[in-house]
Length: 303
Image 1 (cartoon, rainbow, N blue to C red):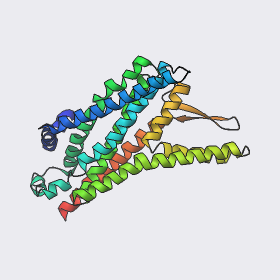
Image 2 (image 1 turned 180 degrees about the vertical axis):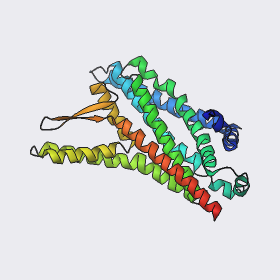
Image 3 (image 1 turned 120 degrees about the vertical axis):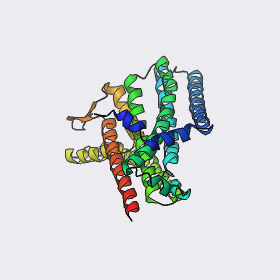
Image 4 (image 1 turned 90 degrees about the horizontal axis):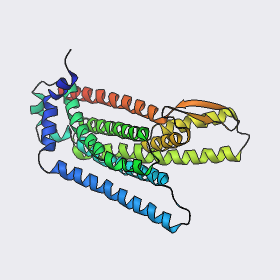
């Protein structure tokens, strides 16, 4: 049985893209700028929290500061990944066509799946480097308390899953559309819809259903179950809501795998943690778009 790592790094597209991406100052400038933005935001957040603890008579404990710092760092990382990841792949295939190198690339008889995997892996490797480089900033919250290893691992997994999905979507639109600009617009549209649009819709739905449940004590168990199912689906489709809800249940119930929901009538139900559903759904969606991208390339070549 062949070594998977050998198969991956034996892919000429992987080697070409990685060498091209890390050659020159651009990759290091992006990495430096990314860390400066995350670090600067962390410093401002810490100074703001410590100043607030001095202004108000009620002292803010270290654990609360640590949780706010960790949440802020993860939020700015997710925001940056949302804008950086699509940029690496929106022109992966369409850029080859615009540079008139696509036909030359296809004469190598490289399978479509290897071509797509090469473009995906080279982009993901750099995005993962950005995420891993910010771990020391996240770990500052351990000094102050309020966070633990599961918090960091879950946040990292959710952000990596989001990056995989966005990179895969970028390659798909790059293969689907013949120009980089329309592919970039479509990719960023999907990214903003998933990360920002779904977060707004989820927040509105949660607020409305909470008010309905509180204002109407006679809401039936079936109606509340329906609200819970829709709310769960919305939460598990958005990285912001997934991270927020998972963090809340980790703090209150100290269980990273499941959580217990209590209905207004007093009955309870145990459900999987949102991060589990989120990663499963978006890994599956990413796999589907990977297959669709490979088929699209094959269809164009056959035509």
